Image (cartoon, rainbow, N blue to C red; front, side, top):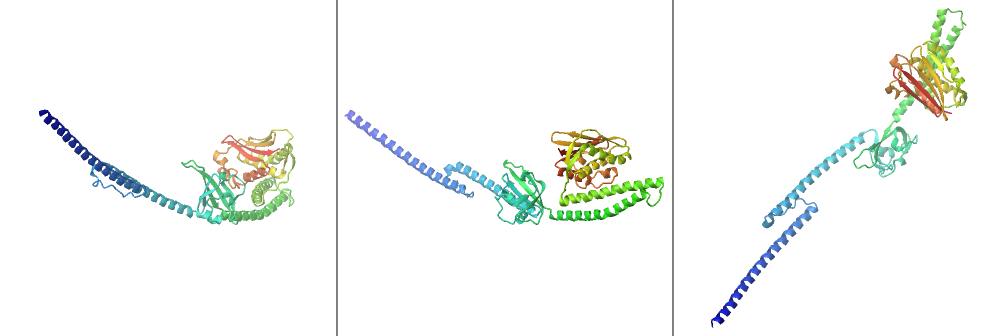
Length: 429
């Protein structure tokens, strides 16, 4: 009997244990399902919030009190959203400031009398100021090639323009100069700024000035020549005998008169070069005898300062050139050597013959020319004469340079202060 009772007791005990285990399992299952449901709802809220942030709603936040179990995570996400909001405000402020600066810069550019265009390495217009639109006569020039609107007069490379004259096809009545410089940008893309300057008024004033000077010099030339003729009559005693002192005075007057006539002639010739170009009448010239004749003509002037004109060649070299114009250049260089060289020193005139060219050097041993003056010495109206209390138009070397360039050659200078000055005429053979 006891065994039966013990057997049933064990069965009952096992049943109780099973029931307890079942109840605990159900409780854990329900709790887990509740937690999973809560986590699912929280993740859905996080997803909704992040999608709102993604599409620009940075005011969206997660209510940390709604999900106290995930409060720490909610606060972290909310702080991230606040940081994004602060950064967005900074970006908006920076963009607003950049837009204002851009408007100010554009307004400043548009207020300039010059026209400014930004172009790429293919010449396509990226942006432009109001004057460019006005001069080009179009409001749709972006993306178009700048060369469709301008003509470069000397056919220079577009990207190497440095105050070169150009014309604009839609503004033919105006004259322009152009300057192009590369922009140094961090993106390393090749872009250039092209500045166009309206020089119409400047050219008109220059033309009026040249016309005035030409008229004035032409009118001055007549009485100077008349005075020169009268001095010749006096020197040849056509009106009676003159004393030695009177002869010296008249000869000095004659020399001064000739200098004045040369100055007037240089001004007049410069005007002719500018207005109609230089017309050359070329012929074959024996350079050796040609230079000897010039030296013979200039020797009396050199004698006043005891300078010795030395021709250091005996070679018979032929060149094809305008004798009158080349003579003008060489005489001008010798005259400058006499004026600025040391009194009593030699003035060397050398000829160097090369395969395709001939070089004529005129070298004095005097004051020399500074590097600063060398850069400007061939410019129109620039003269160093005033530094040495001498008279000069600043046109002699300018005209000489134009004459040699018209012959297809070049005129250059090399100098050291207080040592020497050497001008080189380079002519094609």
